[in-house]
Image (cartoon, rainbow, N blue to C red):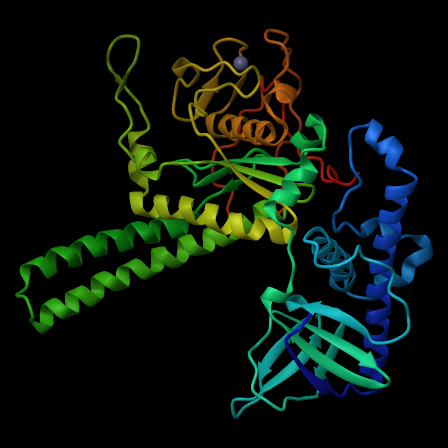
Length: 465
Ligand SMILES: [Zn+2]
């Protein structure tokens, strides 16, 4: 890692803690090296028979056991960063920039890589910073360092010791090597369909809730936000009318224009917030390695829904009210943002993000693959006309998308669904998986429990081979 490097001066207590952190991170790194060697030499044959390749992941919890209790005495992020460092070293190897990672010895320069959860820059007055190390549970305190030239606040730092001298290096984002999507895809393409399916999240972006994941998690605005956005929208329309009535160039018109602009800010912040939380939760869901979304054309999604009639020819509910409930622009930009954010966050968490073809995903049965408009009697219900599967419509769609994601990685032949007709409704499992559920509201309707012939709960250790 390059970037700026300054001398720092930890006190006695800090030295002791930092040396322990350095040791634990090195232990984790070396454990990953040893594990990889084992996989590549002894287990290679057996694994290749099972159609799986050794995992190049950043799992580390299995290294903490009764004989390594001392690892619990350092922040978990220090350990995780040891595993991530190893994974990054492997990334450089794949990119032909370095050799395969090897054991780190105890000689020479020793360092610990700290990410944002482990340090903070606090304003120290006069435009200066103070660098504080540690977490709430493991505080280390302010670390004195001498910056001989100005610097930015870095994304991560390395604190190192060599020959009794301490240094702090400020790494920039570019120094960090994340796996490329093609590498992750190559890895996942070795998996068998069942394992990959268990590690896949399909995400349906819909009009009632902005995003519905195939593990049942709903990413939606909370009611307060919705009310406020609706109010701001009314204010915007009012001020826009006023602006139109006022004379061009007048101060009144200028004021109206400012008010119009201001009404956009709240909704803007709310959807940015939702998109960040949803995308983060999606790509950090435990055990998930593949996140699939539809390649949407937003304009088609926000078009008015087709009029429907019931069996007596009277107009029936067609979801127009649900669609009208959220402003087009709000929905459109949330969908786009969730996609964009998930796309760039996924590789940082060693997750593959894929866009899959959107055709008829709302009318396709996630169980038997039957596609028909009649499968969708109402906006929120899905009833397969062939196999009888019933589900919440958005949940069914998210499962269809997950299946398409798996097909995109493995090829269609391996992933086809169970034989048609052989469906015996099983008792539903608890679908309310709450992992990665970061403070968003669960306002969306739950998938109906009965009759769902293949309830999807995500095993949390799916990718740990
Ligand atoms: Zn079906």
